[in-house]
Image (cartoon, rainbow, N blue to C red; front, side, top):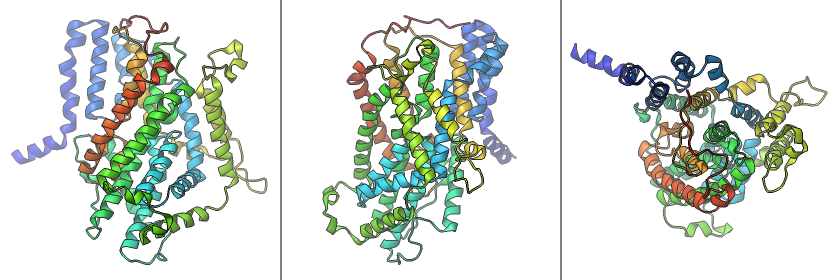
Length: 516
């Protein structure tokens, strides 16, 4: 009987925060009774539910729509308006681009080309994959970048292992994995993503598949290094641009919402601040992972071309063969690349700050055009331009079904909940430039390197079966330190003249009281 009760209690442990947290916080609205206390009740309740993940994160994000009208903090219509911001339009436009990149295989061409440029020594190969994934994550969702690159990484790793085992390259030597392996990997990836949506207290080892015992220690280390580097590079690359990762977009929208007079954050100067951070982190993280997994001997990095091992020659050949198999760029790839370059160019030149941008051509509509306007306009083209010539049935570059499969609706709702919460609570009084606090906080939010459940990219990579939890913890500790030091360096050096961080801005009042 006691064992059954204990088992039942353990199975329903996720319900504990749901029933225990509200009674503990009820004195705030019932005893204190002020609007500030009622708003604090909602804020703390959401923070605890988000931390424990006792219910889905997106559902917790809807709490302001429930409690703010009941407490008289905001009308229901006002709360609903806070859930959909300029951020969401920017996200929609970027996801249209990402959908076309993935549908027509442009990501494979970019990743393979970068890998062929750096060489096939394990350390250089890892740097190539990191650069490819980091570049993709600057423009698409981090999870999408990882899922685009990891099948290529896995196939290269399988080729390396086959060469070491003395198997013939003629047997399935391409970068296309056999169907059974693909289905196994897909299943583990789905489990890994589900793991990130469940309680963080559950064991991450549930999705981990141990490496075959026949592998050598060096092979295991190479596999670990390659996989973990892809997960980390997606987060590192994502911070370089405003649309690259959700925290950056949330920061931008929050800043415009709380400080509507602030016009100092745009695509161009964010890139100037964060691209050096991303590049510095990428190089230092690569060096750290090389030392941790591959070894401290750097002499092998500078071997001449004729001194490659059989494994490196075989890997090089299979990568070149796969790149050649892509053939010339298709019309669909060319169009996607042109739209991508045009989008970046328009973002950079809209309002660069040091010279008038193209938005100055609309003097009577100053401030009306944003990066989201550009993203939506160009994203719309993918639903209009035909994918094939007039000899084929009319089919657009992407369909609504393609878009729906890529669009992270949970992220959109989760971010909307944060905006709604921000509408109800506003306070600062330390009288420093808000950017001096907000920028480091935003960037460090992306440095979730420690655990498989820390973010979806970690879970996707973990599900391939080459890593265990301690591998990620050891590597993540060093990478977190690298990220923290890089951000501190940036906001105390080149970030100061970019955003005038050393002065209190005119657009920020000395303090804001909590609004009823």
